[in-house]
Amino acid sequence: MNVVNAAAFTADRAWGSLELLAFGDHRAKVHWTDQPYRWHENTGDELFLVIDGVVDMYYVEDGEERVATLRPGDAAVFRSGDRHVAHPRGAARVLVVERHDTD
Image (cartoon, rainbow, N blue to C red; front, side, top):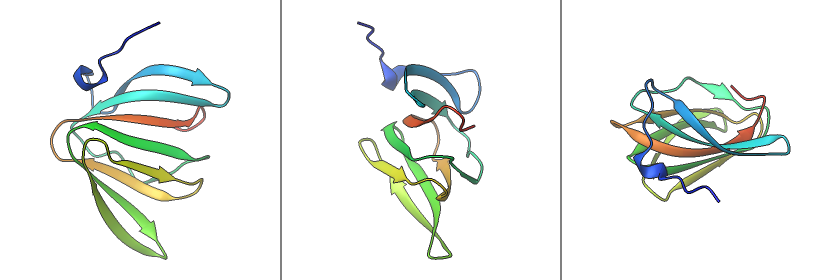
């Protein structure tokens, strides 16, 4: 057994990560960031769970840009091809489960 204090994880750069588990074509990582990511579409489904901090998640639905504010315990599920970008408000830690070939 390996115990990880994900709420205390830090990295030396925005979106730095610690891989917790790889299974099949997927991996689970804890990310630390204090900067926005970039607009992207995943090659498979993605689970994005906020552990610590607040993240504004921008996404496109029915051709319109929308935003959802995610707080600790909130999760967003994206299907393959869903366009989105995360903007943390200050430092945040998130759990991301996605395909290995997603950058």
